[in-house]
Amino acid sequence: MKISQSILLLTLLSLIFACGQKSSAPDARLNQPEEFKKLLDAHGNWEKWIDGRAFSFAMVHETNLAWENHYIDLVSRKVRIDADTWQIGNDGEKVWISPNRQAFQGSSVRFYHNLYFYFFSIPYIFTDPGVKVEKTENKLVNGQSYEAFQVSFAENVGDSPKDTYFMLVDPETGRLAWLLYTVTFFDKANTKTNALKYEDYRDAGGLVFPRVLTGYQYENDSTKRISYQVSFSDVILVDEPMEDELFSMPEKNAVVAN
Image 1 (tube, rainbow, N blue to C red):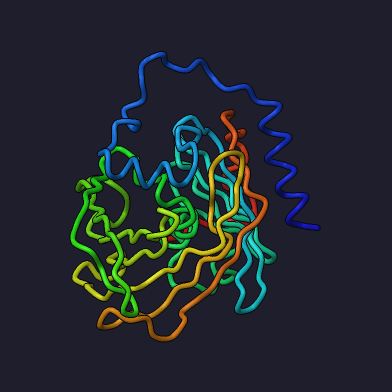
Image 2: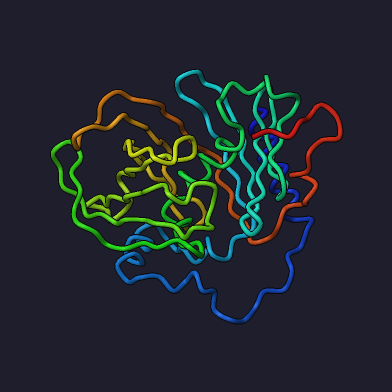
């Protein structure tokens, strides 16, 4: 019930607040390498992502059944997450949490606030300015060879431009099957690779998104123990913006967090 009510909020906001006039010039994000376009095409009409202004989804952590609703302004990348005992937001200047820092058990609110949005939005989000996608040698996972794309970032892109990503393509569907990635947010010298499995794609207005993401520890081209698993539903992408107030830090019972 809480998830449905929160998703309804986005739908109502998208109807109330009209978007500004769009430029007639082609969006530079449409200019991608041909091999990467083939991967994007396998995920639907990805121009809808380029035109999108607001994005929302519901997510459940399968380990403890904790739920979250995520709302994202795709232009400013402002974020809000509603959970059972806390809210997290990024108002474009700062990351905040309500009612207090102790309500969130993770090591970094800033690291978490757009983590699952980012994972869930691949490969579309790799069309962002400052992101470079190029074909690389095949990668092995559990003895199977996959066509692979390496992703790198300009120095001023995001909080962790030194992160590395490899997108591995399902040979049957042409869609993203695995993501191999490193996390340098906490340690810039970290080179440990993690694996993320993309499964059970579902259509959402002409684009496809995975219903389940499963994270694994990864060593010697093989997956080890499961690190986490999350499932998604109620995916909404619209070409009208959400109200800025949705992302604003509450005047009471909220603190700036790192």
